[in-house]
Amino acid sequence: MVLRRNDLLTPEGTRDLLFEECAAKRTVTERVTRLFESYGYSEVITPGLEFYDVFNGKVRYFPQETMYKLVDGKNRLMVLRPDSTMPIARLAATRLCSVELPLKLFYNQNIFMVNPKDSGRDDEIAQSGIEILGGNSGAADYEALVLAAKVLAECDGDFRLEIGDSGIFRELIAQYGCDEKTAEEMRESIENKNFPALKAFEYDNPTARALVELPRLFGGFEVFGKAREFLYGEIVGRKLDDLEKLCVELCGIIPEEKIRVDLGLVHKKDYYTGIIFRGYVEGYGQPVLSGGRYDTLLGDFGRDAAAVGFAVNVEAAAKVLLQKDRSRFMKSPDVLVFGEQGAEIAALKYCGELISEGKTVFNYPEMHIDLARKYAKEHNIGRVDIVDKDGKITSEEV
Amino acid sequence: MENKKVRIALTKGRIESKAVDILEKVGYDVLELRNKGRKLILSIPGENIEVVLAKAADVITYVEHGVCDLGIVGRDTIMEHGGKFYEIADLNFGICKFALAVKKGTDFFAGYGVKTVATKYPNVTRGYFEKKGIDVDIVKIEGSVELAPLVGLADGIVDIVETGTTLKENGLEVCRNVAPISARLIVNTVSLKLKQERVLEIVDLIKNERIRENS
Image 1 (cartoon, rainbow over the protein chains, first blue to last red):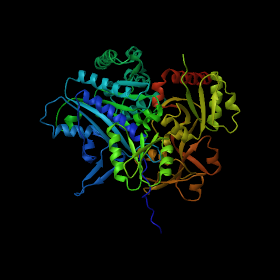
Image 2: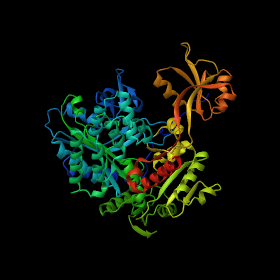
Image 3: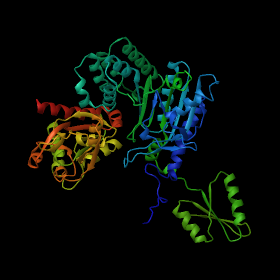
């Protein structure tokens, strides 16, 4: 039997990024990094490998079947990080424990997850994101949302920033008083706007009625008016008022038509405790950005502090940029430099001169001028400079 | 106001013909859909709507990836295939059910031996028995599942049952209902947000037409 070798493949859900794809990705990373730095955020890089336990606590449950796992030298279970927020919370509670809050951190790093087979989804995703740890939660929420909108605007397309409050669902489901399994079923149906499945609960009582209405309550600010017909009670009412105030005030800085509300945003991620938001950009079929407030997560690591943050899918944003205008990321060198036999060093020296003038060069590595001309033509290089043995330079337009 | 382009994926076959009837009653020009020949992408003139014809599981894939905004697909495929999208309405046609069927007169749940279940829907089957906390061996069958218990491969089958005639003719009977099935209208999560007005307009037209017909 011939052993099947996989040395010519990349694993499912991963791929090599080439040329303009790299350029577009780098553009996104550079833009958001500049943005985060200009707002005073400090960069951190956490290890790609973490202990399994980091992602498996009371309020930080990642299903084990979605994580890539391996074991370390002591047979302890490790994972390729499926998320950057947990490691940053760990960091804040350990090495940064004596650093005073608020802390504003940002990262550019990849996360890994196991997707269902043949789903066409990426198992390795480049993310950039911020975390605001500590601080007055209102002000931090505003800042996170404003930065999220700025990140979305960097994708150069029509975007929407959608905001909800995970506390509303949490409060309602507690009032409803069902068992955990039913609660999870309802949460899933609300998240998927699965109205047929929710129908079964519709007539139970006013709280059930409110839960069933949640996924319908999305759109512009008119949602708040509609929501008050179904959502009452002191706590829910206050959360609704707070969310409305937040959205209205954000209009002072983000155009109103870019802000959407969805009270049916109820992520699986159990660590969200307050506002929760997503970003959509025209041209990409899934959310590009996602985040929220998580006030209990740091406490779970042993340092009680409120926090809010978001992550943007850098490759998704890069794809949107590429769709808009691929050609601007396809850069050709300005000059092809051809050194004749014996002029290799002279050619390299000349390359250096051109570069110091601000040009980009392609030092042709073969000894045939016709091949060099052909290469220049095929690669849209407008000029060929030939360096001869005496260091004389002849320029040709292509 | 400008109508943003919307693409709807229909499950080829029975769901497609019923869906085309609905689209016609809604007031859309479905001439091209009726005389489609071998074309897979068709347009509804004047509405900026494109209709895509695909196999059931592909309808979900297209909608999930956002290349189609809306889709009409059976609950059976949604249960088996899963995925991330909004399952926004029950269209109340293509009604049938998933059921566990056994050879007439046998008791599937008798004894403590691990039972074998043959099915075309391993995920649905696994989900059903997991929920019940029962260990079963699942065998995936591609063709007529009814054969499996008859030739002794399986103790029971999980399959779609419409009228029950096929079961009866082969000496099988339903022993448990697993889940009801009907055609569902699904929506891509981003489309609903970025093209909210247009998508909801179409959703409401279709939903109201269904309510009208069923009343």
